Length: 395
Image 1: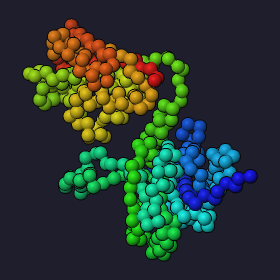
Image 2 (image 1 turned 45 degrees about the vertical axis):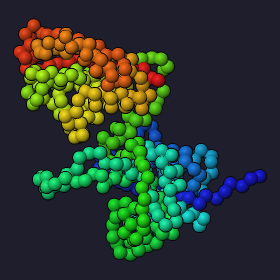
Image 3 (image 1 turned 135 degrees about the vertical axis):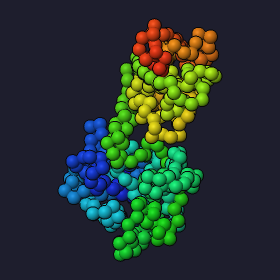
């Protein structure tokens, strides 16, 4: 009978957080996402990776709950695994996990259970990148425009090319990490993550690409995002289309020329808005996102995303089409109607439909326009109202 090799890599899953910012009345790791807890989902990613020792650091009083989830996730694989009780701080919790490692371990990963959707591929990539003289973190580039502030005053820009958003698991050579922890526990210094602690002790840390799915569940909005992503993985009946409806309203009053239906209209009064005010494109985005169950335009392109300020229809629609494709949907068609006295649309209808279709990768788009016989705000020439209907289906 062939014996199973003893693993030389271990992962410490830190699950001792309180969940205060999540607004939960229980530890964050025990909060339900979709019938499974945050910790249970984190362990799914761990046990889909290469075989390693697993140490779960649980909140005091919840050791048995953590042990039950660990057994359930193991599914009879008989990985070396255990549960230890966490401390008052994250560093104390990681130190408790380090103390539980088997003698054969030479590479240790430290993983936040709150990054519950982290893939096995990311876990394996970090483990493979650790060297005897350097630690490794997965990280994403920073895409937002960053500012240095003093109170409410913006005092200068920050070069985002010099920054990266760190994720977990973070991997280290075991002996060097243990030595760093021994020294920091004596000094009482606190660090924001293990990479900072390791570097403060003189260690070298390198980065590899991270993943958008490895975000940290910290707030109620993060929890809802995780639920949405997990819902996307649920199979739908084959060949059944899905329909979404989107509406948008913008008042006249912006600067420059009017942008509508993906076209610039020189000499026409512009619409106001966070981007270019193109109500036709915005209604299309909402219809497509709604059909695929991916939220709405405010969530993905709103004022919290300054990179879309001033963006035109092609940017919004191309990104929306990519999001649908990533979620396993193809676009059937989109039908749009806008209400307004201006601009005179019929002469540019075909041009608009071609531009909007191209932005969606060739999907069929039809656009019509109507007036309201002088009734309402559109009839008074105060703005434009749009309704869009989109049909999508699973690939």
